[in-house]
Amino acid sequence: MPIIKKVIDPETGEELTIMIPTQEEICQYFKVLKKQHKIIIVYQYPKCNFCDKTAYYDVKLPEFGGAWGNLCEEHFNDLLKATGKIKDEMLGLGKGQELITKEDLIKLVGEECVNEIMK
Image 1: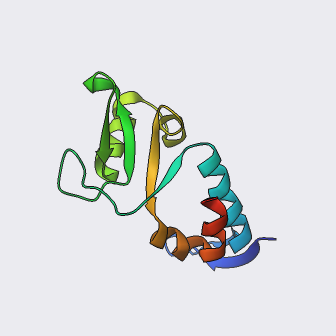
Image 2: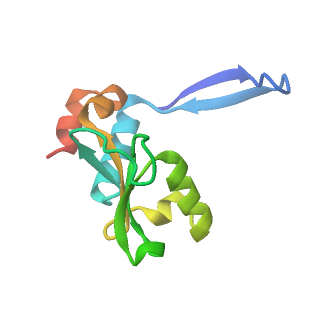
């Protein structure tokens, strides 16, 4: 069951109710992403093919004849704008994957969950 918390919006002063997912819910979310081929666990992050920043995406590049490229957040967002697609439409088998290291995934969901995801 998600944690429900009340917070104050710093810009408006309005009280907001937010739901924070549990560790198990986050784990289930990443399991689904892995099954859908939308994430891939990598040993280390590569560099972006268009700059020297860390790449978090490996995607098919339609403007380059369907070649694949590693993209940083900025260049991935540029690709989304250029194609008019949303992130979910750009990820999946034959489209692209979001990259995450095992260490970063452990920070998000814990080692036990990562071991389940990697089965």
